[in-house]
Image (cartoon, rainbow, N blue to C red; front, side, top):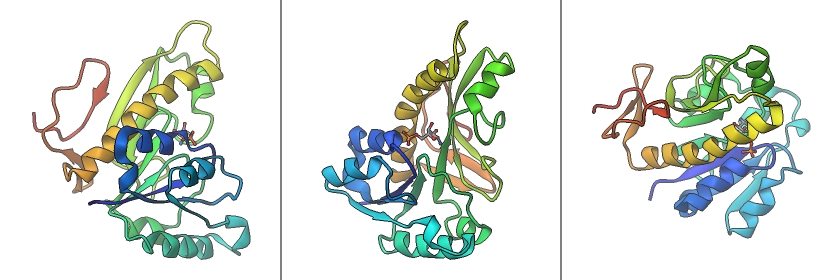
Length: 213
Ligand code: GRF
């Protein structure tokens, strides 16, 4: 069975959505850089191995990434899933997991990379916001896009209401993408995400570049 390791830094609701979608048996471990990450308790309660690699206990990024990779590779995952993992990764780490590391970002990339995406989308007057799942490359939130879901920005929205609307879609999209990878339908080829046998997405909802339909 193909396997996954999930990295979290906080509440871990996306990690939870992957487990609840029936992929828990594929999840070999949940690893956090923060000992107080809320998601760790959920993983433990569901019989999933957990570990903490605390970035504050390492002298620099390279040392932290080395320790993190050692912990991950003990589980030899096919796929590394970043789910609210709030660390910038070194080029060596990114290269080590090239083509088998994905991230979820709460905006329609390439718009609004980085932090405070919902506030910035509202301030920019966007009528549409959303979520992106992408392969991780050395460029922050800049890797090949796998799939996106759009949501409306409604009159009167604030950061909290928009974040909640986007998060509900994150919880649907991320398990779906993980499943594609586990089914060997999703690959990174020549810098593009390629998905086999995807049905035509509903208008305005989901796009999956490389679908051969
Ligand atoms: C999500 O909005 C995710 O897109 C972003 O950080 C948040 C993590 O939430 N990268 P959770 O820890 O999965 O609940």
